[in-house]
Image 1: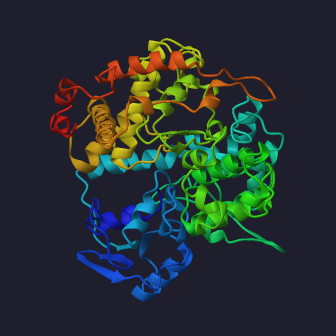
Image 2 (image 1 turned 90 degrees about the vertical axis):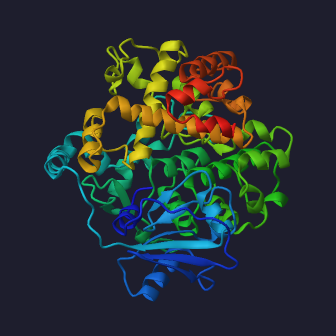
Length: 528
């Protein structure tokens, strides 16, 4: 989740924490190097993340303490609550904040003063110097305009999710773009531990009726897409306020924005009335109503209580055609990337173990180049394939790319750093002393996604859950037509091909015993 908490925890001497059971009353965990203590957090319950951080740091008399914490959203078990650290960084998806809330765990506070051993200092410093000297060549755009820098470009090609994924173009995209953010309300840039890029935006607004505290940072692309174009809102200040609210309450901005846009479409289609909304006009473009609804979701008030369960659950309760407007996979709302313009990405959404997820997915643009770009040639992918194709070559490219994306999760590295695959292997070897290589790291990635698949199967998910929402089978309502609906039969065929390539049963998606044996995790088979 970026930020500084992970580094602080590691310096305290811990690779990971496993929290079992549930406390009888609210508590927080205090880790001070080798000293570990469970402390009362009853007085913290109900506080937002800033209040929580300030109170705990004052109690511990140390402003350098780092926190992984929840706000009222996690306490109220909003299903897409997340864990926040340093007020600006989120373990954003899949409801980890609700899990902390269910355990009455308000926060984990860490302070570490240990020095970490590095196996090969010479190689380590060589790699560090390389990134220090070359990051501008690869990542200046991330520093200058951040992740929102592509908003206008996406809209121009019909790939900017708009009004709950009804369209791919937004006539107010320029007002939401990274350059507009930089030139108007941005007051600074921040970054994560030891990173030179500093891609994080810091925004501030101090106007009558609109105040935004810069301590919460500023919105990323996903937040701008979720609360901006996908809600039909071109007001960057309102979007930034939604970002602040979500960080204060510990809500995933993607899922929260998608819940709001879902409700807006249901309202415009007559499935929700003013009586249902508590008097709110939930038409697309209503920024004030959007912000009110975010507050209602966090506190589970009125319609917010239903939307706190996520669009898919809410659609079942609302009934009628509402399920057509729930843009989810396995209950997880889409990130703000339009897969009707990238069919390899569509496959990735469908088969992802965490539902619709862009972080271990595929970007078809690289495969359309001749020769293929984005490092695909390093993986043995040499033949271009169109973005709307779902043939075996596309599936193979997705599988290799996705397995590598999982490596970033395993080693705890940001995807925005432009390390080559060979350099990643060199980093792991230099730090740990484990003399690894690209092939071995990719196998680790494959092992991870295979275990995630097994976990889901054990918990009741099936092959039938690897599907896309109905909207992905339809064309845009208006605007430039630059998309191609995903044919369900093509997707089914691609899924079977993918299962086969991964060593999973094509009928069930279950990893075979021989594949698990090959990955040296045969014990997983017993869990199935």
